[in-house]
Image (cartoon, rainbow, N blue to C red; front, side):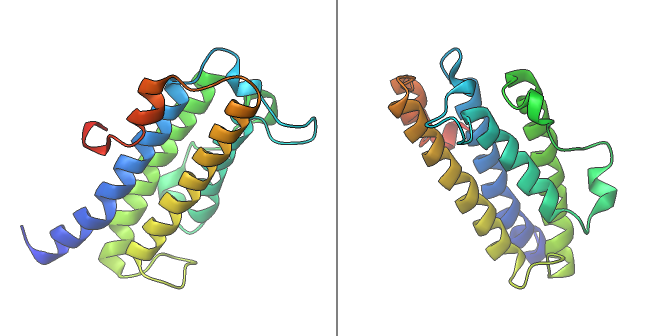
Length: 158
């Protein structure tokens, strides 16, 4: 494996793991948890997942070739697990391809730092929302099953 392949793998692999963790969390939610929210004006759990997808698409503005056919999750579908899962799967794949292009170019369009730093930003952003989702679930009585809660940290299985 040459150096460029190693660098590409070092940037893309953590993203692929993190995006699978997001899907694992979505798949492991208790029934009706997507509608849970802390206050009437706050985002629901489903809206947090829809936001992750929208954030991915927003960063991909300079990569229209990779986002054809992708669109934001409509607000009225933000609590539909199947819609969210399909959207998150598609945008995760597109971001992975974007990271490959970015590593080859040495830059992410619209981001001032390196492709590796951008991937770190994405993972941190999604992790933040995982925490928000966990708080909402705990505060609204939709506790995550232990297998899901601890499974979020079993990256070798994702």
